[in-house]
Image (cartoon, helix red, strand yellow):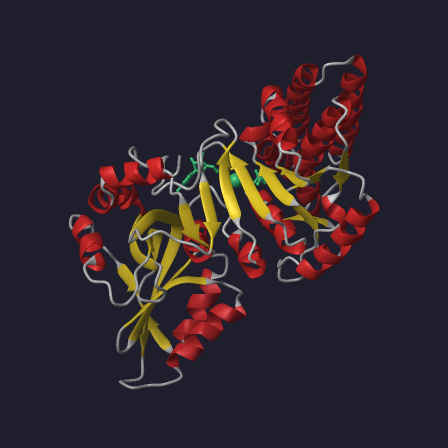
Amino acid sequence: MQVWKFGGTSVGKPDRMHSIRNLITENGTRKIVVLSALSGTTNGLLSIAESLKANNDVEGNQKIDDLYAHYEVFIKDLYKTKDGYEQGKAIIDKEFSFIRSLVSIKPFTLKQEKEIVAEGELLSTQMFEAYLKEEGINSALLPALDFMLIDADNEPVLSFTEEKLSTMLEQLSDKQIFITQGFICRNPRGEIDNLKRGGSDYTASLIGGAIVAEEVQIWTDIDGMHNNDPRIVKKTFPIRELTFEEAAELAYFGAKILHPSTITPAKLKGVPVRLKNTMEPEAYGTLIADKTSDREIKAIAAKDNLTAIYIHSTRMLNAYGFLRRVFEVFEKYKTPVDMITTSEVSVSVTIDNDEHLDEIMAELRQFADLEECDKDQTIVCIVGNFSADKEGIALKVLDAMKNIPIRMICYGASEHNISLLIHGKNKAAALNALNERCFLYEDAMKDIFSAQ
Ligand code: ADP
Ligand code: ASP
Ligand code: MG
């Protein structure tokens, strides 16, 4: 069994849904197909929630009407028969009547926001499944809200998914294609929740881990993981192979093609992850597994909007226990630290979530001197094979960065990652400079052609 996930742009037009129907039935493998919401829908639903939260019901209703109009047009092109169309119309009418029912709930809280945002995936999957039925395909819908669960720390409960899915699949043993919602889940209170933006990738990998799938395929609008951010750098190219560790570093440090947690469950169960392009299905894409190529520097990613905190011990040299106390403060406020550098009496860290920054600073001040924080910082993360006996890699990286001020450097934490902290305004310059210095065009071409 394989798990295939299609992102927002891959289901964003009726034609795309028609192509996906062909793709998933082509090779006869049994599959669980995870779908995102149609592109633009999740943002649209969040914007409706914003209006309703601000008690601006007129604006909220107008936005609901606009979104409904989009779906009305969509289903006209999606289905080929009158019956199919009527099925589609019944689905959108039912889901939009639920959305409209939320307008009168006051106050409009986070609970309602999560319910509204889940509608994107509920709509796309039901519409697609009705289309498969119209086409006579032997498919079934698996409701993600019945088998995806997060705990009180927002961590997915894999054992729950394993148990529930195995029962569901047993009961549907005559079916060939299963459709399910990405992104959405329930929380320990039984309410509708989600796996954060871009979470459908994570759903696919959690399902892949739960059923120990032969492979997880993430289908999107680009031909695999590129060596650098294609939105910022011009000459990027797809990477043929990555290890789980390399892919996890890239996803965590900002490569938007994958939700940051996607690799964890797949790696845990040894399930390979393949990234594929819906618009160009014959392109090789990227295979994420245990195997790697010899290339030293493989890819670069960047994570934005970080805050750097600079902490100095008030006690003098050789004080032990200082780091423990520092990290206990971050633990208390459930705030993950992304990057750390140390000197004899100082520690600098970066955090992504600054919700509790004031409390964290106040507690740190009880035993340390603090400098003013720097906001709008970016980690540039260089990923590859950097085993301890290799020379010259740091030189190459730093040479590329010679005209860009660096605030922190991390090297040696793993054999796969060098991280640099810079001001966000220098990100584009840094990514482009590293691209020119670290990747030879000829090498890239070799990589691409060897993958054909
Ligand atoms: P989906 O809607 O299918 O989940 P996303 O927009 O989340 O798609 O992810 C695909 C996008 O990720 C690409 O269109 C590309 O612009 C962006 N991206 C950022 N960094 C990378 C990278 N290193 N390699 C490939 N794509 C990247
Ligand atoms: N629809 C959700 C989002 O836009 C989840 C996803 O696309 O992966 O974030
Ligand atoms: Mg995505």
